Amino acid sequence: MQPILEVRELSQIYGAGCPACFTSTGAQANTNICPHCGTVVAMQQVSFELYPGEILGIMGESGSGKSTLIKCLYFDQVPTSGQAIFWDKGKPQDLFQLNPAQQRWLGNHRFGMVYQNPHSGLNFRVSAGGNIAERLLMSDILNYGVIRNRARNLLNRTEVLPERMDELPSNFSGGMQQRVQIARALATDPPLLFLDEVTTGLDLSVQAKILDLILEIQQQLRVAMIVVTHDLGVIRLLASRTLVMKYGQVVEIGLTDQVLEDPQHTYTQQLVSSAL
Image (cartoon, rainbow, N blue to C red; front, side, top):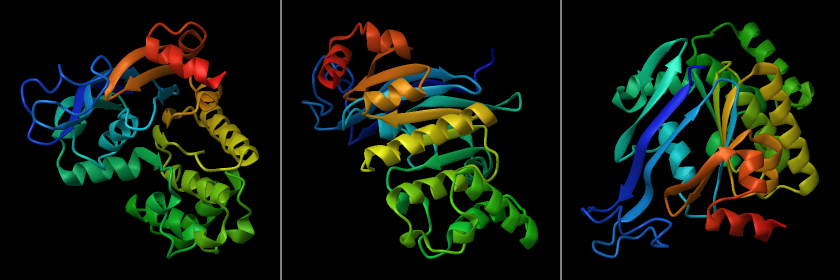
């Protein structure tokens, strides 16, 4: 099967960098700060494939580089080096060779992002329906009736009452704000979604409902997803394959059941045992 996304040796550093940065940082060195030049190596030479309709989990502690990875893929950050090929309807798009206008078009039409903090993914100055309308307008849908009907259907799909579509996101609970973010991300029927710690800070019952919603969307729409989390429960429920990161490096990747039941890397073993 043709992957929808191929990532090759993606790296992100903050600082001048030196020839020893990669060999002196990472899981083995137990740091992401180069002792020779002080550069922070947020992510080093990350490679993986994502297939259509698949949910890939990216797991690791704070500072592991997992959020940096999807921020680069969603064009929120510019990586230092590496390549990512997005296969859009059979045509390869070399993400970091595109100009800013092309990147914006892909971000608005073919990708969706759900941030940990709803303030990063929603415009709190407009209504829930208005947030969806903003994204639809970017995709050249200009008919008011069509936009409003689409917004109502998306909010209904994410279990936000249609009668609340004209309310501001500030009137919603954290869990409801995440639902509106998901509805906004789905507005243009993107084949690829990025989800960055979407259940962090939510009550357990609300977390469960959000995770059920994500699974339902994936099963109904066959959207490929990259789910970033430090929560093994989220990984276990959502991801078919899991990639484990530590200090910017991928230390393990495999089927989720195998990674969690028989972890090979010492760090993964520590993560799993600490969650038991």
